[in-house]
Length: 477
Image (tube, rainbow, N blue to C red; front, side):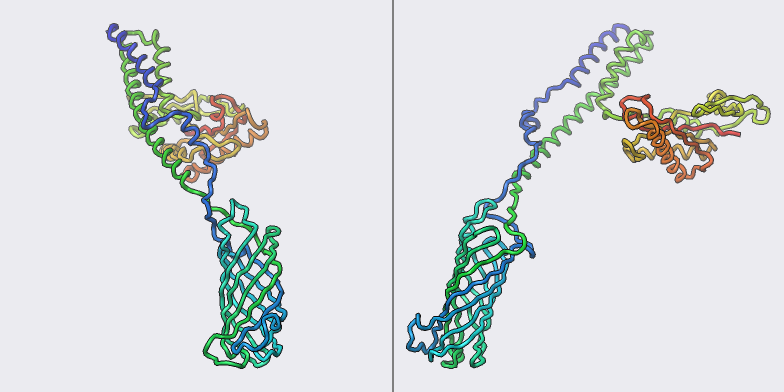
């Protein structure tokens, strides 16, 4: 048997080395670490070329004012030349740019014109136009082009003040714009309007023929937010997500393989312990086996808070389910034991309890029954690090209520942070939180005692000292 053990022990050491010092060589799943280090970094945004988001309703509005001269060209034309027909014109417009290339406006213009009889008349023209900036594609990044060439077309109503006519009219033209600042632009516009021939009282009413041609210059002012938001190119982000997803799946598969290997190592170590125990050599090799077991278990459990397997609670629960707790000598016991809680002596009546004929246990020297259960909290709060810990309170409450046991909750904080007063209060808050949870599970308030241990450094890592310890106590008479 010794020979068998001596042969298996080197195998266990070699398997341990292979399991925890594996060089990943799968070229499909894992590339160079530098490659994935770059992939894990945040992708710098790249913008689509010549693509912007549509302006919101309150952005890129504008007001413009311009003046100049206009000439009426009607049917009949009359004897005056173009320069003799010129009269002043005033124009006001308000509009909005929906994109760098597309916009719209409402415009009012009018003043004087000479009709076909060369008589001076007054008119007003209200029209809506669709604007198209043909130079918008020359923008670079977030800086718009300084020049804009904007053809437009629209329709409206033109009113002749002398004869009262107000026929439908078409508007059209081209506007040149020069950017002084982000909000101010210089304007120059050559435009025209076409309406029916009887606008000046001469001609038929069902044919287009009367025209107004104008040349104006002015200034435009932008209201609200100026500029345009570029659209981020999603392709680099999608590509990074796909690569990292594949990498994650491959690492998950590798982790499953390592877990299987680790489980096999633990099984071999357990068998070695049995052999050593039979051969009487367990003490000699205990340190080496504990080192192997510690390495294997550390790979299967996450670092951080210590794990409690609750073996004491499970054992207590099993014994209580098998045989009810029976008190012996309740009427005859006269001796008293002294228990210390928070430095104060508490006198208790001595009791003896037994579980069944095969397993008996005396608690005359201690108030506690079973193993303590720990609950861990977030730094400087009374919130659990993981709410799944509350499932343990269900079993504690069920046993306490079934057998009339009392519960002591001790709250604590780590003494590496805070001060003595704060840690004392924090420990009490954490114990109070567990007490409230136990009361919700039907444990009587009178059966729960809470104390604060203040700041402690009993456990490692330091986070483990931020806990509340729950213990079951024997019934007190």
